[in-house]
Amino acid sequence: MISQLVRLFNILNLIQPNLSVKGSIIMKTFRIMLALVILLSLNSLSAFAQASATTSFAYISLFPAKPVVSTGKNASLPIEMQSQRAYEKLFPALVNARRQGVIVQFRPELSAGMVKVEYTTGVNLAPLLGDRFSIFNDPAPILENMRIYGRRTTGSLDTPALYTSRFYLHPKEGYFYGYNFPADRYFKFTLTDSSGKLMAVEDAYTSTDGYFWGYFGWGTWSAMEPGYTFTARMYLLDRTTLVKTFSSTIPNLRVTSIDVASKTANGTAPANSNLMVELYHLNLNAFGNSSSTTNFLVTPASGQWQTTFTTPIRGYDEVYLVLEPGANFYFSTYLTAPYISTGLGSNYSYLHGTPYAPASMTIRHAGFDYSFTGKFNNRGDFFAQLLKPNGAPMFMQVGDKVSGTGVTALTIPAMTASVDPATDIFSGTAPASQYLYVYLYVRNECTDYSCWYGYGDYLKSTPAGTFSDDFSSVLDILLTDTLDLEVDYINPGNGNVVWYENLISP
Image 1 (cartoon, rainbow, N blue to C red):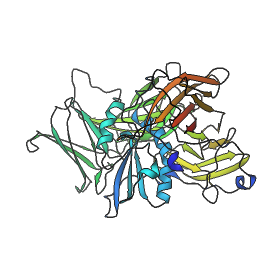
Image 2 (image 1 turned 180 degrees about the vertical axis):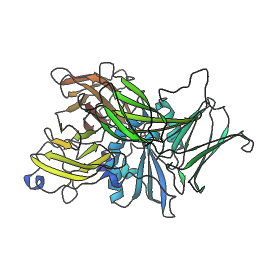
Image 3 (image 1 turned 60 degrees about the vertical axis):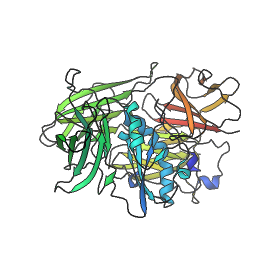
Image 4 (image 1 turned 180 degrees about the horizontal axis):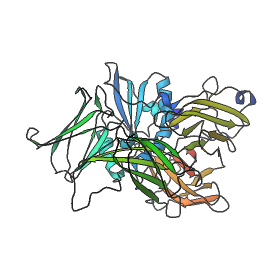
C-alpha cells in the first residue's frame, strides 16, 4: 500500500518511502503496458480558501518532534532543503488519497515544514498516509517544533548590538515568524488585499526570548500574494493596550530559473531593490557539512534580475532570494537547482526544474521506455508514476534509467541494506567510495508525532561498495522489532538522488 511507502523526515536530511525491491522480473506483457502519469502541477496549489461545511483542514508534519541522530551532520540545513525530500516521499500518498476523493486539495508549506490539506470532514487520514506521519487540526504544534530546525538567514545587516525586531515572511505561503521582539507581547496579524478586503487573520504571543511564529491558516485566502498588505499590531498582555503597528506590502519576489552550467540564477523583484541571493550547497565531503555563497545586487527598473555565482551549482542546491524593504521586514523565496529523485524498488520519479516550463521525463524500465510530458508546476516540480492499467505499480530495478528536462540522466545503482539484531550493526552495499545517509527506524508505541523512532548516520562506502555502521551505542535491536532500513545516495557530480529502503517485520 502507498500508505506504507512514506515516512517522516529526520534532522539529518532525507526521509525515504517504504519500498520493497521485487526480486523477479515483471512479465513482458505488463512491461509493455502504458504507464500512468500524474502531474504534480495539479496538486501544488497557490492558496486555500476557507473550508466548506463538508471539508476540513489538516496539517501534516514533515519533521519528527524529537529527532535522535548519532551524528550532527547537516543539522543547520535550511528548512526548505530538508522539507523538499520529505515532501517528495509523502507526495504519492497524497495523490492516492486525492484520487480516492478523500483529499480535495493539498499544498506544501516547505518553509514551515508541513503540508496543508483540505479533506472530507469526518474521514480518518492516518490509515491513508501511514502511522509515521503526524496529522494535526492546527499547525501550532508543527510550527513550535520547527524552531529546532531554523537557520537564520546570512547577510543581514543586523549586529548583536542592535537586535532589530524582524518579521520574516514567505510570499505565496501563509507562514511567517519574528524575532528580537520584547517578551510577553500579544500580536494580532491581518492580511488584506489591494482593495483593503480582509483575507486572513492570525494571532500569537512572543516567547521569553522574543520569538514568535504565525500562519494564516484561516481566511478567504491564506497565501501572501504580491500586492497584499501584512499588518502586525503589538499589544501588551492585556490584549487591548496597543504598543506599536508594523505594516508592509507583499512584493512580487521570485527565483524563476537556475542554470547549473553557467552558475546563473534569474528572477523577479521590485525595481531598484537591494537583494541578497544565496546559493546553499551540500558539500558531500568527509565532514558532512554545507556551504553558502552570497551575492548582493540591485534590481534594474524592469524588475528582472540575474546573478552569477563564483562557485559551481549542483542539482539539489538551493538558491534563496531575500528582500529587506525596511528595517523590520525580510521577505524570502527560493528555488531548487534541477535534479532527479527516484528509488530502487519504488514506482515513481520526481523531477525538479524551471517553474511553468514544459517538462518531460522518460523512465527506461526493464528494457522498455515510458514517457511522460506536461509542465513543471509553480514550484518547479514534475512527478510520474509507473502504473499498470489496473493501477498496480511497476517497481524500478537496478539498471533502470530516468532522464528528463534540464538534468543529467540517472541510472539506478545496486543498493542493499540489512541489520544483525545480535550486534546492532547496519550493513549493506551502495556505489563505491561515496558518502551516504543511512537511517535505522524502529516501530514503537505511538506518540503525538510518530509511531517510529530512529537514528541516522553519515558515512562513506568502501572501494568495494560496502558499508557498515554500529548502532549498538544508541539502541538494542530485538528480533521482535519492526524495522525500516534506509540508504540515500546523492550523486556528488549532478545532485541526482537514489534511495533504497528495506522494511523488516517479524
